[in-house]
Length: 246
Image (cartoon, rainbow, N blue to C red; front, side, top):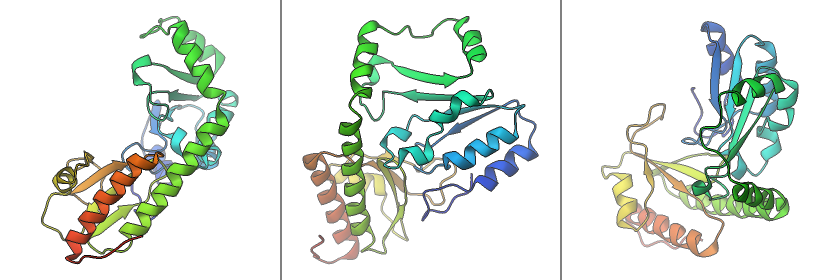
C-alpha cells in the first residue's frame, strides 16, 4: 500500500480501491505492518469489512500490542459482530515469549468450529495458558511499558530531526525505520559498527527508499540508552561535527 513516511496512519481509500479492483475471496491485512509500523484505524477498517461481506478478512494484529493508543487501531473488540472477520494475536512479540508458541484468534463461532475440525497445528499446553492469563491480568503494567516505549521513541525522533542525513519513517509500533539521505555508507553496517544490530530493509518491497534499517525501541533505560548513544554517535559522524544532543 502507498504511504506517507511522515504519517503513521495508512489511507483507507487505497485499500478500498485495491479490493474493488480485484476479485478476492480473502484478504490478509497486517495491522500495523510489522516492517513499516504503519496501520489502519480500526473504525475505517471495520467499515471496509462491513461493506464487503462476501470477502473473508484476516487481520493480523501481531504488532498491535506495542501501540500506545491500541483501542484506536485494534479491531479485536468488534470482531464478534462481523461474520467475515478473523483477528489473530500472538504473545511472541510484545510479551516476549516466542518459545511458548502461543497466540489466539477471535472469529465467528461457525467458522471457529470449522477450523477446530482440522485440529491444532501446535497444541497449547496448560502452562502456556496459565502464563497468558497472568499477562492479560497485568493491563496497567503493560500500558506503562507502552508509555515508556512511546517516550523513548519521541526522544529518538527529536535526535533524528536534528540531522538532514537520515530519514525517519513514523511508526505506530515499538520499532522505527531509518533511511539514509544521499549518504554512501550502508546504514545497517554503520549501526552494526556501533554495536547495534538492526534489521536491514535493503530488499524489502514497498519501502519508499533503499538503504533503510529497522530498529527496536525498548522500554528499559539501559537498553534504550545504549541505542540512543549509538544513534547519536552516528549522527555526529554524518554531520561531521562534535555536537551534544539532548
